Image (spheres, rainbow, N blue to C red):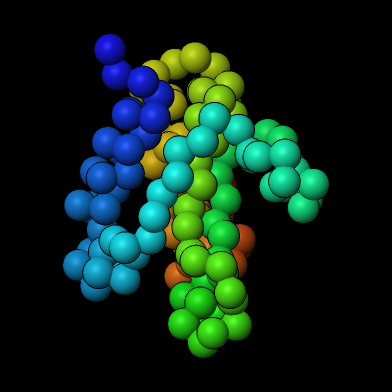
Length: 121
């Protein structure tokens, strides 16, 4: 039986395949970490316990300019996305897609208003 992490990874792969080629080339190397919940260290640093996803390492301009010292990575939090989906697997898949695209939006430098217009909030 597939785990939530397996399903999430498959959705991330599907999203990558659907992106325009120029965007895909830019984001395909960003690691995606599927964790159950934000770590205690993340929570201590101000990440809400119910966060669905998180981009670490800054946007492409910050990361490329040497302003950020940690590698760029996207975190997806399985238990929180599952709770948001209220146990519905179809909704879980859609929430993974939206959350992943939202975090990629942060990497690409989109503002929250831009992402809201694109349905990524």
